[in-house]
Image (cartoon, rainbow, N blue to C red):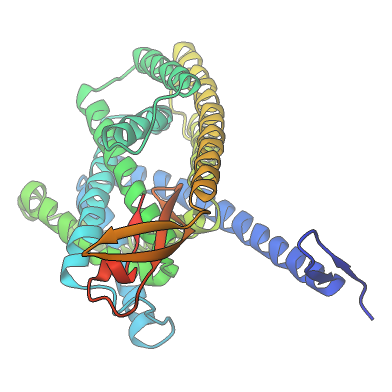
Length: 403
């Protein structure tokens, strides 16, 4: 017979329950680790494959190349949905208005991030591109602060300043630094930062399954990529008979398309299985590994000045993350104090007077947490219970008042 014990609230907990919780936690951790390793390996391999196709293979059409991965992502998710392999849990939620507000921005930003991110390989080396990616925390903080979703914190600002200085030093040490390439990289980083905020909101709050998330978001990204292709690449592709390059080595492009799908699905999986912080830390570790491979295996030149700048950027990144941890802890403490005060002040009943009637109202507080852009936010609702015979909704206590 399993042993039982009572916790502080008087609830009985047996050994089987504890074991089930521990097993569930272990499974979740193992799943997160497997997804993270698979994402890091697949995305790194895709970086080198895209660089090979764009620069060495002569397929200088970055948006067409990344659209192959997005097309395969949508086709595979479409087959899984239509055949019943994956259930659409949020089919009733997706209206035209909701799609326009939530998914179209993700599609536009995803297309910009992918398109400009691929164009960079025509101007900069793989190693230097990964160094520039160390500036993503600075870009992310700027975007969040501009949107009113981020508060400035001393340690965080210090980390961002160190990252920025390190990135400038790395750029200064680049042998073949292209201003156009750096501009495209920064544009891609800004688009990615905003896209990740939307992803965190849509996936974290609404609990989309991985395949359903791709099924919903891929068409929007593909549509905006198509617009970019028609505007920037189609005439050149037709004039230079770019399809002949695809026909000469179709296996390269099939692998690139499938790996594009794999990176998309694994990215969504990592975000859901871990957190935005873990994803960013792993991204920096992956970038460092890609730089090492680019230098040792593919012979990308890296100067001492670049290494110093990149090391400074990594140091600034960890200062930034430490500041974020401190800031989140401080904000959580303030929020807990605020909620405690609300609970204390609302414990006593109060009177509402109006229309020559007096209603005795019992007030209660309900805290409703939800995730917005990776941050835990609380809605405090004051629920009022009044005279059921009154016609006015506010007198009956219907609805809730957000504080």
